[in-house]
Length: 450
Image: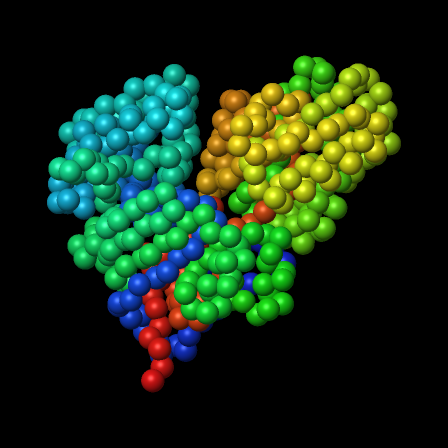
């Protein structure tokens, strides 16, 4: 069995494609895959139950999914996507272009407040046509993102999709899925997937060790300990950016905000808190994706930070976007870094009811879904409310666009982290999408030996 390689990276620690079996072993049908995750069960459900018009393949390229081909006109301001024939939703209803338009329109309004990747969207025969006000050269890659799944309401009003599994039961913290025998992409090997969400990491690893779980997610800070315990793991390249977003009226000029970037000790965060997983970074994209990430300096410059901080007057507050305990540790360490430069920084308490937007700075974890540098830069800039003017989209143009944005210091990248999953002894064939999403549809379970 081949272990998937998705970008040229070096993953520290032990990366075990533990599903390695003898060459003579063939995939087997049957069984239930037990998945546990610290996220909500819905995150796994979306991958297995729903499809998008396009997808990102193992090499990071955009590939067909519900759309088999596409073309652009008017300098990429008009895109047309032709649908795959014979695709049906799980209730037997045939997929149409009108279904795609309805689903994308409704989901866009719900997920992004109406800020869609297109200006107009309409059905034309067996295709959908999108138009934009500005050139959108990365539209096919944009539509491969998870927010653009195609959904459908069955006769009972329940949401279903066209994916390899269908929902048999679901709640916020759990879901049971059954294989679709006539799925357009082929029947999965396993008969069912049982998902338990919002599980503590320690509980997940305990369940994995006693066989109650087959696959669990593993935070970067736990990978080294798991490797020492000989836990089998599959890891992605860096896909999640730890970043500081600055929106303070006190820090009005780029020079004042630069004091924050110069004071941050990225290497300490990487080596101490995250146990050398991923990479310390000062760029919006991982170095393995662009090849130029190393041009953005990651070294701490406390002397310059102290000089620039002299122009900052008044106290500053730092908030964390989530309740994640490790992110709270990062915030505390950053606050110490900034105080060493002479900045008066306090970490706001997190938890339910807190409002990170009211702070001067917010520590965030941003997930990158794109598989190539141009689409990735567009995705990240939109995440931070900016536009991408990258010319022809070559590496030099992308670098200039990224540098111009980062030189404003409203966003301070700190670290890029991988996504890692621990797997049980009977799991075979698990691969990850380029963004670190597990692909259980290709998994099969090794039968117990007599």
